[in-house]
Image (cartoon, rainbow, N blue to C red; front, side, top):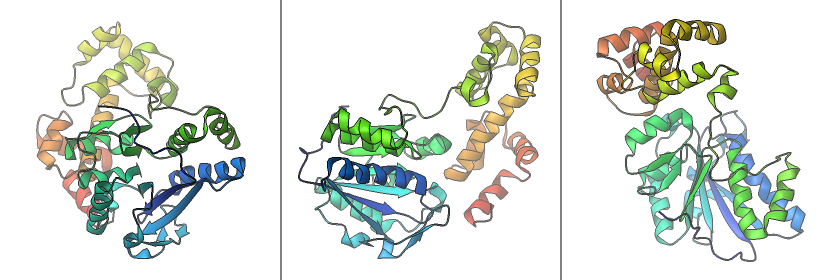
Length: 330
């Protein structure tokens, strides 16, 4: 698939719309808007204009309870926009999306570039607008997304630009996406100057991955431990035996256990179990997969084995956790 943009030549101004859902992440929204404000100031020109839309045109609160008043309702979004971004939070809070999905399909048919930031990828995927496209999906609900939308090529990159679809994992990655687009419009010198305004010493590109390495994330300096954790993550559905893991990283099982105890205060088996349960929890909360299928996807030999371990880790049965989340209690 081509990585080429479908953006027109830079017009007198670029008009960008943002559709915000309830509980949208404000840090990622700000990271997308502020570079445009800075670009206008640096260039002393009205290069970028942006508008905010919500369902019904009513104010929405961010996930941090900051109230934002929009410029209009979803029906006020016109074909005059160059790009429309959907900014959303965690997928289980996205409800009543029929009007949005219909509008997205309409705008797409008319050649408007459609983008998504953070959980905004879910409405786009639901509308079928990401089928056979690369799409950046936040690591936290990537497994659930892949299960739900198999026709989408979900990646772990900070952002993706695939034809007329711009997607971003969220957080400060939105800043990198916008700076990359500005570099195309205004040149590297201007985009680098804007980047420096935000103490952002390097504009990360489409090849940059979301998550830090195990070594950086956990501050682990042991190569056998970091290699073992990578193997655990790569083999969640079909867990390896500890002897196989130890052989792969070049130590004995006893040495591996000692290293995990020193660096993580855990045994390798306990750590691997936590990773499998975390994957199961993600699928439980962000997908509609039956609990029995989730158990298999997380490498458990039976639903009862899965349920016992899940209850031990999270204090409730898997089905109970799902019910709590759906009802807004968990």
